[in-house]
Amino acid sequence: MNPPVRAATAWPPEPEVHRTHVGEIVRSGSDPAEALEFYREVYDGRDMAFAPSTTPFGFRYRATGDGRVSLRTSSVSAHRRGVLAPDRQYVLAWSVEGGIVIDDDREDAVTLRPGVPVMYPAGRPFHASAPPGTQHLVHFDADFLEAVAVVGTDLPPTPLAFRVTVGPDRLAPLLSVLREVAPTMLDPSVVDGDRAALDLRLAEATIDAFRMVDETVAHSGPAGTVDRAKEFMYAHFAGPLAATDIAAAAGVSVRTLQESFQRHEGSTPTAFLRDLRLEKARLGLQLADARETSVAAVAHACGFRHMGRFSGAYYATYGEYPGDTLRSRRRLIAVGGRSDRSGREATVLN
Image (tube, rainbow, N blue to C red):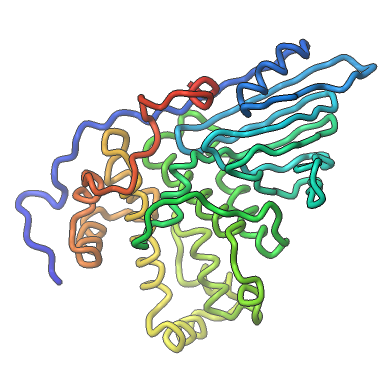
């Protein structure tokens, strides 16, 4: 299907863009009572307490993020325990030292190993105990993560069921994405389309790692050439990629890569990469707020450099221009920067 001709320019006028709000807080101190009050507010905690210690008490907490995703670090010098119930959030967490116990009041308690991410139980309060040390966390707004999980389907957003722990093979892609995006996400000056693209990449990687799947199917057979190439493209679609880069990641020559794609996909690696970028751009536009970002910002964040070609390819694939998707009131959900959101998250990051 050929897109209709538009006069003068390939891009329709876009509405005024308001900058995405990215909040950053740092709290620290040496007063246990102040720390307890702060952590009760952050996690809707109860029955929280610090164990007596002969060493001086200290805590430090840092959070950086928008209304969708925030990266946080918490360091406490004392052993602590209590009941946590983060309201309408999904929390990915890992401990530097290990030893944190989740659901320590149940037979299926989980003890964190150093540097190995887990998902906090969602939708219910849970007991936890932690030795002195540092913990890193990623907080996802529940509306945002649930919307990401159903984009491309006819299903409505619903609460997600995650495993608390998964194996190394499931964690490896997530850890790769975390290492790549975290330094940029910790920069409060990264906003708008760039920030939205990073939020989406981390959300998708987390869903892929912890969602409930049939493990016997997931682990059947080694990854082939096409699978390795796809995995590489999923991890690096936002940057410039040549066929030689993809072939090298798959461990084959360019010719073998092309033949493998033709045999198994009936397509080429370049076509697959273009379609992948279009899919990510559509997801970004569906979840974005037209007041906070632009088509060009989303397209650039998904690896497109020529806006006219992007517009034509997008129309040919989805039957509408990218600006129409961004402005559509049929978006699954407006996420981020919602002035009517109140509660603890707003108190922590705004």
